[in-house]
Length: 118
Image 1 (cartoon, rainbow, N blue to C red):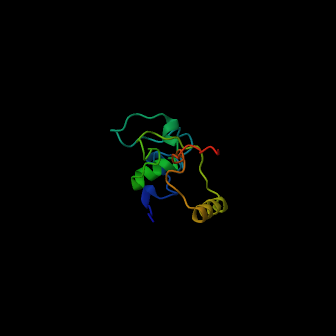
Image 2 (cartoon, helix red, strand yellow):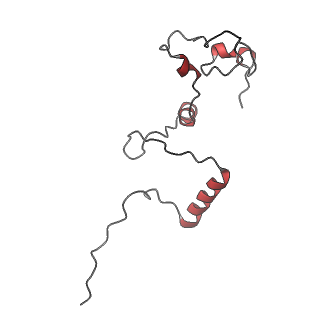
């Protein structure tokens, strides 16, 4: 748990001028947050306000890149995010019951050709 104090506190009046997401309280008439770091490339106001995705947060905090394929190293596209607890429990229960293979999405194992009855 991280607690912020001073200008980084959640309700601080100056927080919007210092944080990239701009979610703090902003004084009336202030169009966009001030970019504090002079070394960063200039970003548009939309980029400054955009929140980080959960994939970006995992990469930043835990160094886990969920957008990289574990097999080929290529970039993968996230097509769905399951957040409903009952759906998650049902999926995990299915895997516990039937087993989850890492190669589940690949082709089935090779087998011998069918034998013809004479």
